[in-house]
Image (cartoon, rainbow, N blue to C red; front, side, top):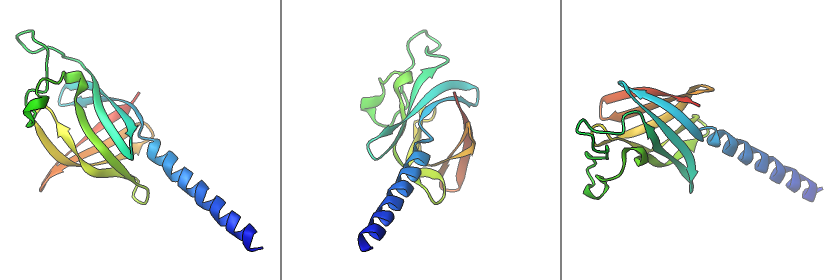
Amino acid sequence: MKKILFMLVCGLMAVTSLSAQTKADDIVGIYKVDNDGDRSKVEIRKNGNGYRGQVIWLENMKNKDGSPRTDAKNPDKSKRNTPSDKIVLFDKLTFDAEDGVWGNGQIYDPTRGKFFKVKISFKDAKTLKVSGSWGPISKTVYWTKM
């Protein structure tokens, strides 16, 4: 009897864990982003124990002088030559199943060269609510899953 009860408890724990993991992985995909007229596409994928968001396409890949756009404002000088369609916006975000929020990390704004505390959640099945904050200053943008 104890073995059967033990197996049932283990089975229930495995199903619960799998369900939470599936929910966490709902964020994986490609998103269209329009941030103050700057249009891009961001891919979110699982990376180790968390999630990584990286630009994969940018509407305007050239500077006014015709040179390729890079991550020129990055505070890390070694990353300033990164092509604009390869910029990592966040990495190692984790999922809080209780709140339904991805966070515990920072999001990078390449237009300003700044990092902000980030929280990401779904507004609806196809729309991510991405909120960045720095002290009392906060901004929310919406990304649409393709």
